[in-house]
Image (tube, rainbow, N blue to C red):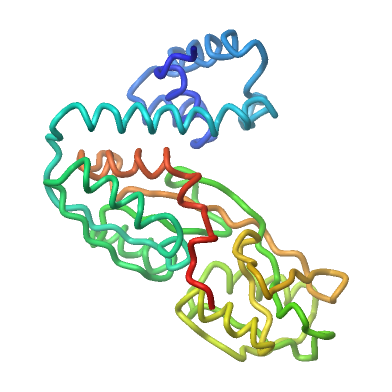
Length: 290
């Protein structure tokens, strides 16, 4: 049986991509975290991390264990909350990008609220760039959103490729290619236009919507192509790429960030819950059909 203390350090190293940041987050020394990872690897019987002077990456065994570790820690957290009266109280102002708010987030917040009934949760849904500005301005305590490039802040929940999506029965793409986007500023929009500029592919903006359902509807109707996380390309849409004259797109990184290095206890507890619930948060099948 794996020790939860070791699993907690392993998850922190994996998500924060380094021993130093993991140690700071866990309020431990770097040598302690390193020793815990060695103990966990001894228990697992195989290496879990590939270390270099600049980065830390998961091995195949590490990728497998990460999902189980999150589930074990989440169940342990749920059990503790069920057996003891929560002392958390106060308000948490959450910002969520629309592409995350419509997936598994409501269920995770419902569970957190049931465990901590004295915590008042307020959610603002918006564009990732604006949410980071509100976080920096002290108007939000925590944000959950996606980005295509970042400054290293926060904890990575998961990554996945961006893909060009068009109607399943769409023919050859015209010039200039019609596009459906979220309003500016938007990381998907920025990444897509940069890729098109690099490929010298003419384009025009044909459809703008603040919702995933809206841009998916435009693509489903054959009005435009739109960049979406690969797992969000649902029924009725197909992925197109270089063979269709469209450039490859970067990965989208889904992150949770708190407002300060020393956030409030409710915000810290919710951030931990979101990190341990990454598998549920990425369930795009819960999006409303277009």
